[in-house]
Image (tube, rainbow, N blue to C red; front, side, top):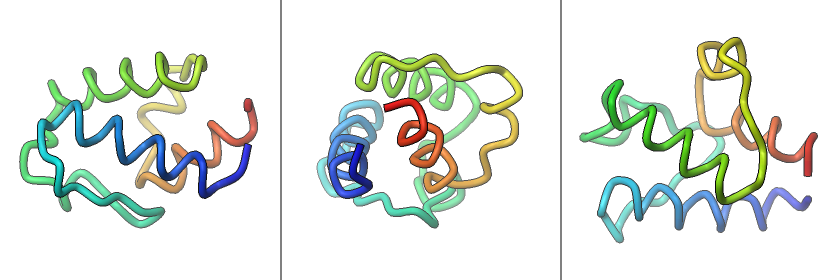
Length: 79
């Protein structure tokens, strides 16, 4: 799956989860960059990303992700 396609779809997921149409994520985006991204929202976000892309992240993957780019790489590997 192309990185551009993944990025566009992830932006939509982030906008829906955080209810903010102005969110624009990229490979370097972290939880520190989005005001409402706390541990509870992280769980909602992971579930929404899994549904959107038809993937399942392992707990190890979820805890190891440091930025959106790492999430994109996992999606690309499985897509």
